[in-house]
Length: 367
Image (tube, rainbow, N blue to C red; front, side, top):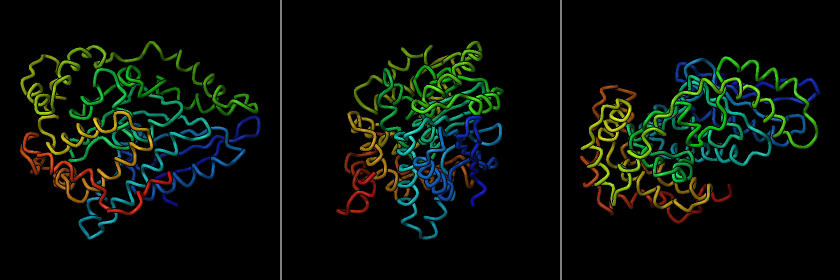
């Protein structure tokens, strides 16, 4: 058993069980590696068909993070050592796990305290009850490592108001709990101190036959109401018109020009701007094009499209260099393949949307 993820079944007072999944790798901010993904997927499948399990509680151990994303350092190392099929294995199973949570037949509570980034947001997004706390910080920071927002973000970000999703993709901006509630990324705000009380209340609840969703709703509602006065101020809500003006442009180069020309006394907004300008131009172009192509896609179609992009990014995109600069050598001086988004021509971009497995059936076709 991989100690980086722990499973527990808490007995209820009425004889049922609550399945608890705890990400348990505090040193990596609970980043997901292949064994963790495999074990969570298998356990969720087992619980899905168990009449004893009434709901699932997904959390991250420690105070710093629910999950800071996928452990891409290991993925980069595996590819460098000749494991060219590693990205396909990793991303296809990660996306299957995310899709399983989205379509699960029992209530899933995701307790998203601390950092919730990249793959962590992928786990959270499909949960029935997406809880953020007073410590939650959410982001899709892939542009800084040469990737793009994946894990279903093509579907999720494209449905946000006034192109906020595009702003998130290009800037990697950090969101607090107020932002997450405003955007619908989360649907419950509960102070982190109430976590043990919530679990105890779930164990003591009346788990009648039928609608377990209502049972969870009633338990969480009490602690949501008790925490309402502590919800932090939403930057996204306050800057909505500014963000809309920046993103509502005829092309990506014009958007980047607008960001470069931006002057503001708002430190949060300027930090987002700086991240966009320092990020991978190739990643920006991929993210922009992907959100256009998946505007009317189903969730499954979005995941299938992302698998093509993610494998290509890992094998010949900027991901290798971005991870090196940010997480391995930590010199923060990535040498991107393109100097700016105007250099990314349409032919080079289109190559990333072509399946790397050729004419073979899509690996997620049966999902």
